[in-house]
Length: 146
Image (tube, rainbow, N blue to C red):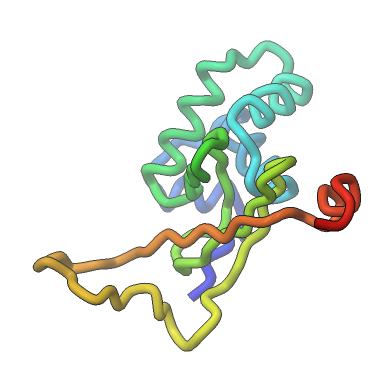
C-alpha cells in the first residue's frame, strides 16, 4: 500500500506522537514538493523560509520524522543520504550515475516480489531495497552516443 503522506501534516505529526513545530511543518511541506532531497538542500530551503533555523534543528527533524515513519531515508551508494515522504510501500529507486537524479520505481512484478530471497536465514523480512542505476536522458545527451 502506498503511504505517500498527502494529508494534514499537523495531524500526521500528532499521530506520530510529535509536537507540531514550524521546522517540522516546513520540512514535511518541502519534501512533499521535492522528494529525494538531501539534508543540506532541506536545511537551506527551510532556513530561507523560516529564517533562524539551525542546520542541526533540520537534521534533528529529519531524523525523528524518519524514525516515526513520516519520512523514508534512502542511501544510494556513493550518494548523499536523501529523504522522501513516500513510505510503507516498499518501492525502489532509479538513480542517474552522473547527476544523481532519483526517481521512484514501483515493484515491477506482482506484490513485493523482492521480499522472497533464495534464503531468509531465519529472518522475518519486511522490506527490500533495490536501486536501479543508469544515465538520465539529459546526462546521456551530454555524453553523446556510447
